[in-house]
Image 1 (tube, rainbow, N blue to C red):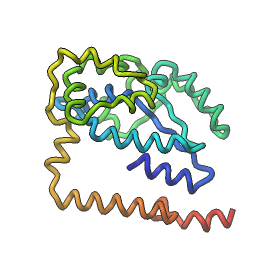
Image 2 (cartoon, rainbow, N blue to C red):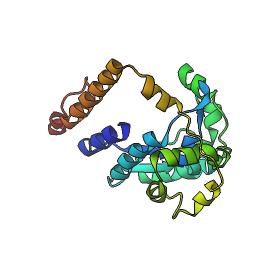
Image 3 (cartoon, rainbow, N blue to C red):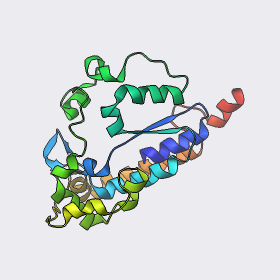
Image 4 (cartoon, rainbow, N blue to C red):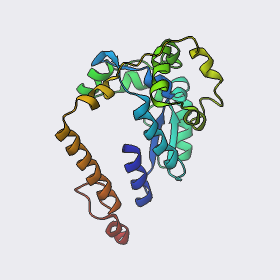
Length: 219
């Protein structure tokens, strides 16, 4: 939903740029949250529609995609590329200095386990979670096209490492939450989501803003 709403906003606001971070979906599926270290966090079932929305948004001129793997491997090079693409950006510090300068909120620190130095340790980490990857494919189907569009794989050759693996079909945190969420809470969530989409289509990206068309006329 976030990607869809951001794409709507980019279409309506000429000055707005959308910076999208992507990561190998397999690494995302193999990630655990500090608050729920005994469970995988999200699923292929949740990732797939988000990537589909991103694929549609990538056709817009002011949508810039940054790969997580590039950011943690060449942070300053990524910063230089962004400044070249978005000419109004002003450099305040090198991306590589993030861990020494960042001041995250308490909630973010708690979720992420504090500010950590930039590292490539989590790149290709999915290879340590092959049962999880195979279980997700068996549950939600192959992700060949997704990996191809995001430039992580070109064919199915990578799946050979799963041939002798028994799939882990246990629920991740988001799957477990969706199953246990009370019906009325899901209805409230869906109604709010529909309201946000309607507000964006009408030109109200936030409740406090006036219609974008009026703003454009004043400009």
